[in-house]
Image 1: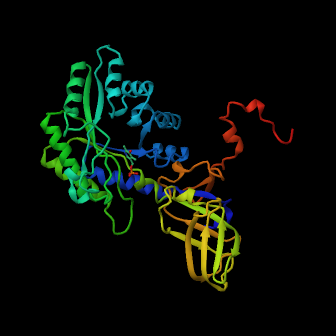
Image 2: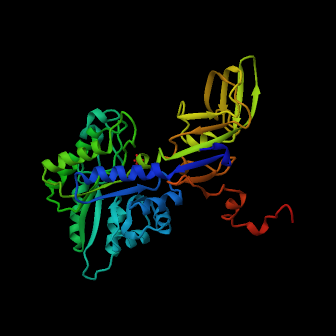
Image 3: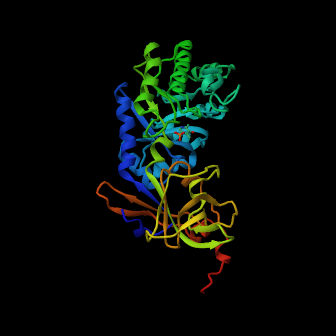
Length: 405
Ligand SMILES: *Cc1c(COP(=O)(O)O)cnc(C)c1O
């Protein structure tokens, strides 16, 4: 692909790679379970084009706020294709989702109260409950320290899970149809899922719950050499469920990173170079760490440098930096490599997860996004953001004068 045909900076979405992830995960799950659902994690990459692609590939949308819920609705997901998680639901969208057959996993006590506002018209409404998981207790080898607890879900180590069950059964028109156990261990190891699913199964048995689904959440590796495969994860869910006689449950996964990281690349262009001492050459690009490293913790990237000419002298040290005025907006260093010059391009691979959704409005607004389909056709699917996009939200627009008026 000719990388000089794109306007920079930009993200490039590889649709084939995206579909490979979705279908790879689904196929692996279907080898073990009758009914499976993939919930595309909207917070991981909320690009509308990607949401529509996920919808077309048969994914549900996994959302964790009323804003994400509305975005998913506007991108074509009907309420029964939405998995609604997290503490930031609104009452209105919560009721809409429960009434219309969405997967709604309760996270807070106010949602328990909201259940009372559902119509008393003889219908039974299905909901799910998020179960609190302490990784230190469930799988110490995967824990971050002695007490890797969680602020999410209702805990069966306190009395609150049992109290939620009691309260729900007192309402009379609510059925608990599923448990949600999302928790991410740093290791992303199948062992952790095997143990957290076993814990969920033990809770299901303890309270004799008659469920439709277990939602095992996100936190998986994508398709990568020498990493666990989607099939390894499917096995990890299956083994404990089988031994508890619960392998007839539907399985829901909520992959974010696993589906969005590898299909997105970021392309930037070198806009200037300068020398500050005998050995050090600074390379300024139109990309920024804000585009691809929102937590500013990466040391290096899966990157490729595309030089316009091949025969360039060797430079002892080149520091590739971003376009912001932050001194530490430095991406990586090159030692004893051919000189980089303005107009050269730098491609960063594997940057689709938690990058575009964590981009601040800092100095240079959101870049363009292109998509490449299975025929190699390239389309711009999002234009670059501009000052007017910000002014659209401003409530004093009438007093702002346009310079050329
Ligand atoms: C963030 C999140 C996910 C996605 O997590 P990944 O680690 O990106 O796979 C899934 N489910 C819930 C509830 C989340 O909050």
